[in-house]
Length: 160
Image 1 (cartoon, one colour):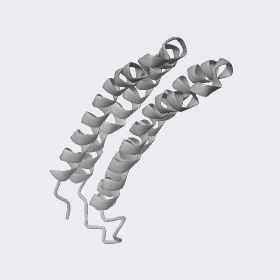
Image 2: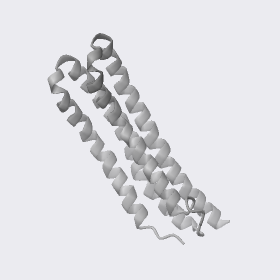
Image 3: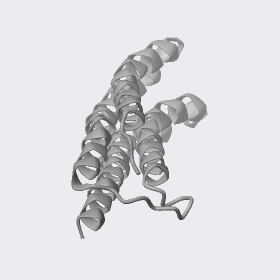
Image 4: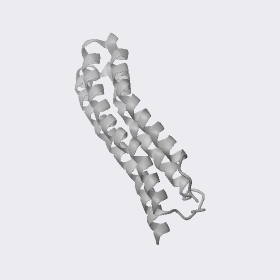
């Protein structure tokens, strides 16, 4: 019974990483796409530049998915060899998943807002496109730190 609870906690952490980072990306892409759509209605030739700004907040979802997959590998669900996982180990994995879950959620939303503002920059000053990308990418830094934190924490947990 305790092994089942430990496994459930671990899977819950991985699922939270996937879900929250994915939600952050979806909201962020929504913000950026709404602003870009307004620009595209008048200047459809700017689609390529705007697509990059729209896509930037989507990376957090991939980072969360990666951590979720690493959790599944750690607990043996990918190989089919599931070791006994204590509640303590399950909690460790759960909490190791939180950096990307929370950083992905919040940075995805805020990167979308910065990308939306960048769409306005591209509308008025197309030559400033890279500046808009750099501003949006600065927010990405914290998603990357959340990803690296989760990976490092997961690698430090011994299971089985």
